[in-house]
Length: 338
Image (cartoon, rainbow, N blue to C red; front, side):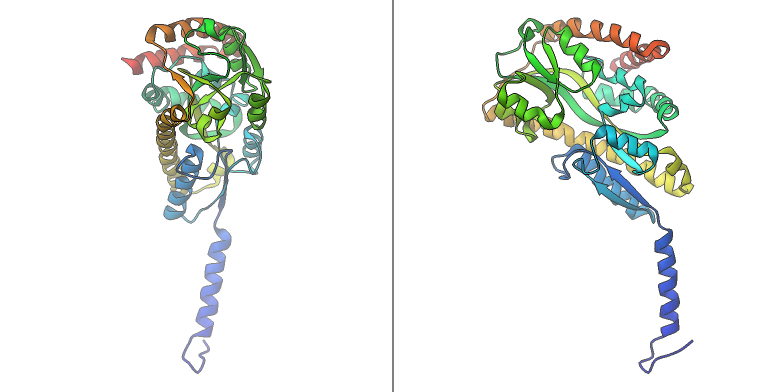
């Protein structure tokens, strides 16, 4: 070992640098992508991603790089990247149904009377069974369920209190068949429009209205382009926090445990932020001039009776021999509601 005149141990420092370098070279990096804004105070996926990163990096040698705001593509592209292992972790909502058809059952309108019922169902046996099924179908492990939010209708034509008021309204929907079926069953004209084109479609009258969680409506200034909001809560939309299964299995048992724990906390954080932005959003859009109407229980029943049977009938045919997931969900909701 060689010493300098100042007494430092050059050889020892060199060896230490080599050890540290080797350790850094061996550390694995998780790429975590989503399409929401990065700001954790207003973005459910942004908050979930940040806390996942902090926990994983704090409790393991793994590193987590975050790619928010669709920087790696839209949700369908993110799911494909995760399946191919190009991105290890993604948080998506509607895109899950494209690789696991049974996930569509969660979007059956008026299934969950309140978010807490959805949480109990998703965090219980039904949610675990659905996750296992989707793992087999897609090669993606559902680490946790988050929350995109409870969806409501807005429009610029008239106040909507019952399905009869929906008649003839052109409503922007996600390019997802189930949503097309739902809006059509309510008597409106479903118009699939890509998310990035929604503000322009509303401003130019291509569509009369749209449907989204309140936090999304306010956060994207859609309330400035609409006159009326109906708090019908037709769909409780779920976020899926997914990891490439091959990558997950490549981790040590200790790292798998850290990643799984971090994901569960991340899912809860996403739910909490979404609940906050939704509750605050109702007040903010009303203060900004949007006319907000909360339907009575009887009126909600009218919406349910119009939309749910049509969607369930369509979905049973769509799912074929997997249609039992509809009945399993109904059983889980009944148990959680008692």
